[in-house]
Image 1 (cartoon, one colour):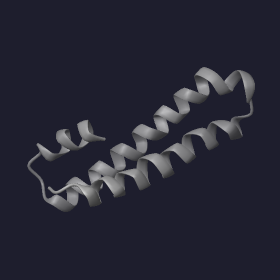
Image 2: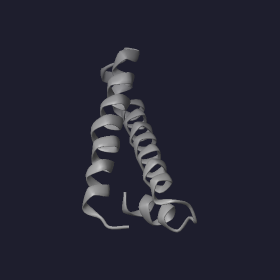
Image 3: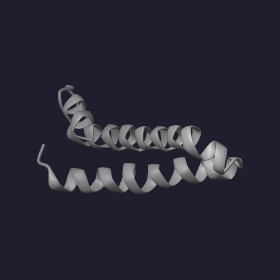
Image 4: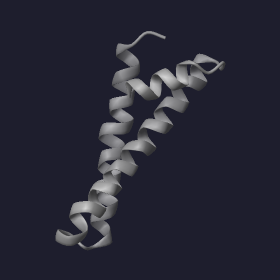
Length: 77
């Protein structure tokens, strides 16, 4: 998240737009990581597509979105 924030913080936009862009990118990035994790491991053990949605959805919401909010609360910009 630190790398994403450094990239977004270097842009010349308003702080509200930076926050929104950071949350979108961190949520989508964590969803992508969850989907890749399912493709590497879960597709053999848990082959149903509902598990794909669970792996990507839970990682997006809890790690990406809520983790991004906590990160923004803790850091000054």
